[in-house]
Structures are given as structure tokens and as C-alpha cells.
Image (tube, rainbow, N blue to C red; front, top):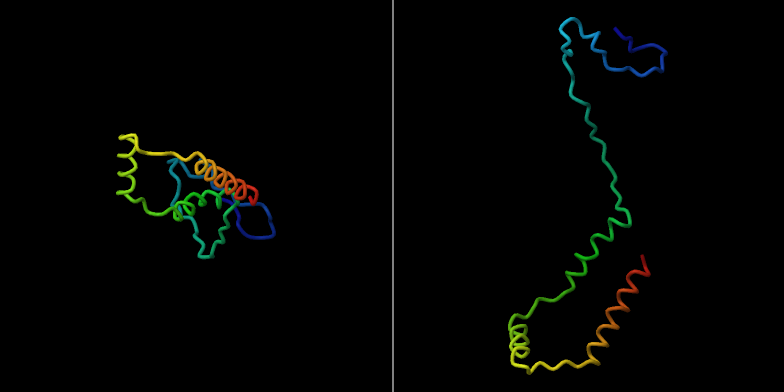
Length: 105
């Protein structure tokens, strides 16, 4: 049997199979102790960045189904006109926004 008191700084180890007796069955065990202390959780930078897509999606407006169907029909009929200057301006704006977001992190 092991002593648990006194001036010893030696940790108490669980009993070995030989200490259980002839049956080899462990004795009654207590459930692990639980703590009621509060735990502080902090998000790391990569974890915080995982939430950015959700925040960005919340800024996207609701899709106008009627407008989408009208655009599809215009494409099918060959009436859909693409203005290359508008496409270029929007592409540049998207790249600028992307660079600003990633420069901050």
C-alpha cells in the first residue's frame, strides 16, 4: 500500500496490477474531479479570420430573382450588352478591397 501523507513530494501513482490482489480486478474508482472555475477563451488571429467570410456574406444584398431572370433571358436572346469599362472598374475596386483587407492582417 502507498502512503499519501508526510513530507514526500513524490506523486502518487495508480496501483499496479500486482497490488490489486489475486483477482487482477481494479478496486472501486472515483470519477475524475471536476472544476467549477471559469475558463477564459481567446481566439487566435487565424481563428478570427475564419469568421471573415461570414461577415462579408452578411453585407451581400438579397438576390433579385426577377432581375436575374431578365439578365438570363437577355443573354439567351443576344441582347445582353457588356461594358468593358464597367467590368474593369469593378474588377479594380475588388482587387483594391482585397489588398486593403489582407494588408491589415
